[in-house]
Length: 230
Image 1 (tube, rainbow, N blue to C red):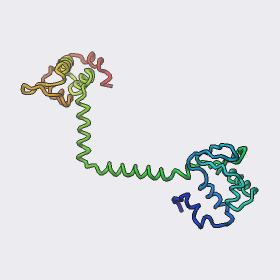
Image 2 (cartoon, rainbow, N blue to C red):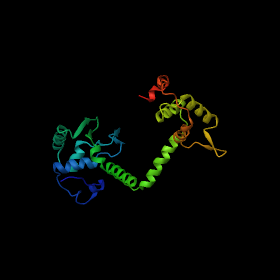
Image 3 (tube, one colour):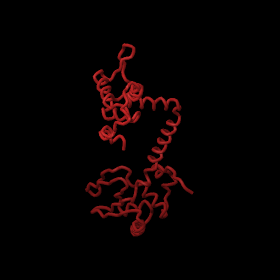
């Protein structure tokens, strides 16, 4: 059997729980989990202010014994048993005994964990419901935005050389500067329009660039832009 159930603290007020009886060890352990602080607070015990943190209790051995119909010695032996199994820690205070639940969050964090997992599944489901065409459009918009960004002259020349290795790099740089001076616009039918995708525009323009002679070495050019060839 696996899984867990929610058990509200108000159960300690139920008539089945408040029935006068001697608690078993299991009942006593559950009572500890239900009684320790869920949130930190301060309490006054015998005129002294005691700060009790989350997962802690400042009840005395006598108080626990009264709840469970046990004597003080039985409570002390039970606490030592829990301590030996790393279930609790005990700290003597001048006016009481501080009980600390080990790994308290393992008993009280399940609800948040389930809520988080539910939200993750919901987000995943919402992502899956986005139509393929819509995702494609968003991808294209992202690519267009990236390509609309003005590149550096090195990136510009390197891209041209990747399309045609023997293109005249000086002409490519001249075109870059011309577009830059013209506010990254080109003239089409007597009207200046923004360059939306510089890679596509450059690719279409390169047919008008001169090619280097076959016997001209490209080493000097490639050396300048070697990072783009590696």
